[in-house]
Every structure is written in structure tokens, then in C-alpha cells.
Length: 466
Image (cartoon, rainbow, N blue to C red; front, side, top):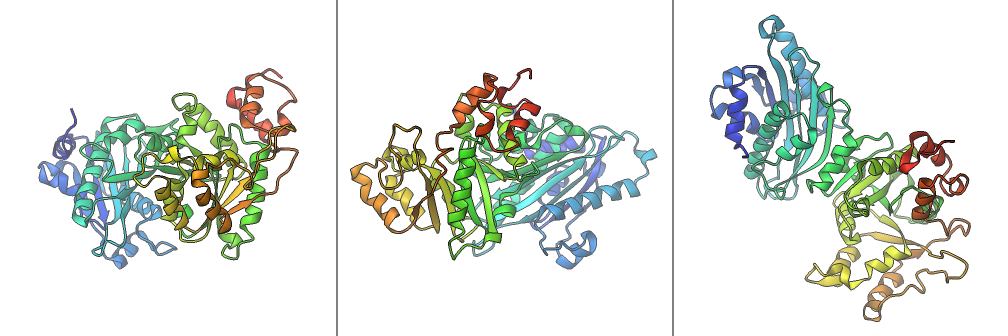
């Protein structure tokens, strides 16, 4: 049975071992309100505060270098400040059996004219047992309710769920799921999570991010080369985004050739500033599920290699390219690029691909044509006996040939040059050789250093005695 927010708040209030502070900025004190309403709050709440004025907030938590208030660094400062005050002001001899906590959120709700969307950061620093070092549970939320009052109510429910789950569950995946108790996923998305501390020893934050996508709590998550989860807008805001999609199981020299040549063409655009380019290696959830359920080890193997090569990785639910383009367009209005192979382009012009749309393929391309996007096509020629396929001769059904020609004639589809020596490399064949422990037959088909990483870390099933 799922408990209501009031029942969860009362359960926390009646637990004499839980004691701490609430500090909330931007959406009112919606979380702590649930704890005040149900009674017995004096045994739970040491302090509650809303530093709503920016000058007051800066005086308490210091000003952010970029001047923002709804950001992860502000949330972390709030958690650090308020938790340290608990330790400083409370005599631990009088609270030997007490588990401290500091809850914080910094939220921007939808504005009156509805021109900005609601979003914010929420976090809990807490002890699972007295005298244990604290742990952190931090999320970023996108609020989809149509008015500010509804968004405030949503924040109150999520925060209450967070406190109850963190003190009653040890599995962070279960905590994540319980954040949606009494809420629809249409009301709120969680697009970033980070857990730290002894309560989450041996937890890989990348797997939690994968859970966000698998459970449709969000449609995309991003990892930077350091392997850390990042909130998408922090990475993509006002950038010239270039995306290359693939299985990268493992990444091969043909992937890198596609990337290098695609980037070279993209940089020729006068609307593109090289220092403003953000490259994304994108893997779809459907690709991760190609052999059934998602294999978490296989997922980490792919991300480990791409990040070790210095690339930023995105995992998404967007099988269809028009949905990916629509998603990226919310972060930037600047020119974007999409590097793809012939098979992907042919799939884009398959009418069956768009059966779920009332407007069919025309609706999808209506979205594509209204965005500043360029497609960079890498040719296909698996062996000497087949014809090289590029934009001039790929098989497009006559019924939609005019649509394809429109894309081509408007300069949105650009053929890429290629390295004939790598054109016949395919990830699936390299993977098979790795699993079969074939020495010397695949090492030269992956980028420099990748073979060593695969062997050292036993990635992709490599378990061979050398």
C-alpha cells in the first residue's frame, strides 16, 4: 500500500530518532508544510527557513560565480551550511540516538505568463544511523504542471517522499521509484541524480541515471568524460550541438572517422563557433535492449570507453530522430548537426516509422524543417562487391522522394568523405572477435588505446588468458 504524503510526514514526525532542518527557496515552504500540518513536528524540525530575498540568500550561502540561484552548487551550499549548523548547535551528548538531516530545495516555478518552465534542485543530507557520516541524495526536477500552485504542491509531495524513502529504504533505485508515490510521471521529470556517502557505498550513479531512462522518469541523461552525471541544460544550453548515434559496442575506427569528418564539415558553417560546439555520443535505450533486457555491465562498458576517450555520452529514449531533434532544440536555437549512416537515414524515410503520428511522416519532418539542423551522411560500402551508397543513390520510396529531395536541395543533407580503410569495420563483428578471444584480429579496428582498456578491464566479455 502506498502511503499518502500526510501519512509519510507523520511517520517521520513520530520517529524520535530523526531530527533536522528544512530550507527551501523559490516555491514557498511546501515540503516542511506537510510536516507541520500532521502534528508532532517539534520532535522532527530543528529549524525551517526560506531565504527568499536574493541578498539574504547570498549573505547566508555566498553568491554563485554565475549569479544563479536555482543550481546544483547553491543546493550543495545549502545542505553543507544547514547540516553543519546542526552539528555545531546541538550537543551530541543530548542526541546520542538521533539521526540528523538537512533537507534543501531551490526551485523556480512557472511564471505568470507561462513563458518559462518550472524546474529545480532538491536534496537531502542524512544519517542512516547515529554518529555515521552523512550521505547525500540529490535530484534535479522538471515541473510540468500548468500553474505555479500545482507545481508547489508537486514539490511538497516529492520532498516528503524523499525524506520517508531515504530513512526507510537502502536501495537507491527503490528510493527513486518511491519519489513518484502519489504523483504522475506526466507532472514531473527527474533528469539528474547523484548519491554520495556511506548509505550509498558501491552505488554507481551512472546506473541510477540509466534507471531514470528505463523507468521513463526522464527521456535522456548525460555523462561527461569524467564519468559524472550532469544536468542536460548545464551541458547543452545555447550550444552548437553535434550528435552521433550508434551502438559503440565497442566504439571502432569507423565511428571516429564519421565523427572527425562530420565535425570538419560542421565547423565550415558560418553560424558555428568552434569553441561553442558540444559533441554527444548518443546511445538509445532500444539499442541497449537489443538482446533483451538492459545489461548494466554492457552499458557501463560502452560508457567507460567513450568517456575514457574524452567524449560526452547521452542515453535517450528517442528511437526516432525527430524526437531527438525536438528534445535538443529546447536547450538551443543555434545550428545543430547530426552525423549518421546510410541505414539510419533510410530508416528516417520509412513511413511505417511514423504510424503513431496523426500527420505521419509529414508531421515529423515539419518538426525537423523548423529547426536549424544539418545532417551529415557517412557512406556505406561493406565490401568490394557492393556499390557505395550515399545521398545520391540510397533507396527512397517514390511516394516520399520529393520530401527527400527537399532535404537534399536545401543543403540540409551533406555527404561526408571517408577513409576506405575503415569503411568495412562493423562493431558487431569486432564484438564477436572479442568474445572469441581472437588475438590480433580486432585490436587494429578500434581507436588507439581502446584494446588495452578492453583487456585490462575485461570489457565486453573479454576473459582471455594472455
